[in-house]
Image 1 (cartoon, helix red, strand yellow):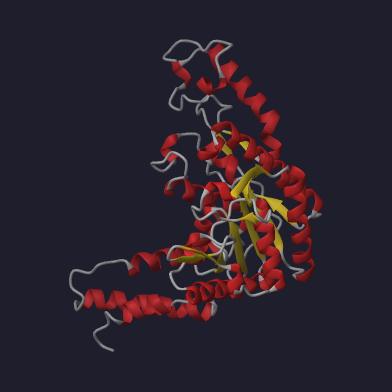
Image 2 (cartoon, rainbow, N blue to C red):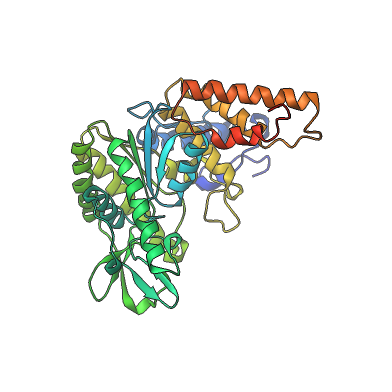
Length: 387
């Protein structure tokens, strides 16, 4: 682009990919055209996504998404359940680091909405798994409805870890919020039974049939089971989102069709649940706000840690009670203190530092009895000279 005025027919991706052009580097006509272009995009999609345009003043060429406040405020004592793609794991780990009572993916990472619906119903039924639900391949035992993280060499061990995780999932009956992250509309079914599987476990491809779930089927499956959960737990709110991770092995066009299907299904679910569900635009933040490969891992498909942190901050802005953020800061400071490596553990300065952290842990434990700070406390007690 240089210092030349932008052509009226310049493609939008050229207009939006020049983050450092100043007002003096382009002419006034070009600035007016940029304002018009971004204003037009705002009219198309701004209201639905809570979009604020950072480019309208001509200073910055970037679309900033400001998510709308969610219809609840999450407090430190609230329980949270997260299910779906690896993005649910990312956000769940953030919550656990901040001592939330969070259960993440009790069946392991799951991508398609039909499998997620099946899992939610199985939790509702509280029906334990049996040996008949397990498959043996070589030296490994696994379940088609679970991630490979549950695979074990011993059948009894595999069944034990699966049912222990199912018991933990029952926490959903007391959860304030259920986060569901949908990854892909493509799913695999066993040819022999027609059963939709959550994970193929690298079994021979001729055992499966692959097809894309329709908008209507995805919405119907989710609404049916979520309505049951909402009747059982009257305080539960559902947050739906679409994973920003691109499923490139499906193919670029197929991935786009898949994400479009999920987006349509999600918003249909929200309309049908009458105020008990809402949408968080993690997909849109990644695709439109962080539109740069700097925010991806080396595979160019998964969001980097920087991107996950940015999306987490946007979620924090719209989902948490005002009391939460000051406590976040205290917990972050405590985490840094735990990871501090002293030069001289026995020095008076470090001993004072350790005692200060133990006081902080004691105060947090009194304010928030649900917080499990035992590991942090033991780390500091081990460094204390005068015990």
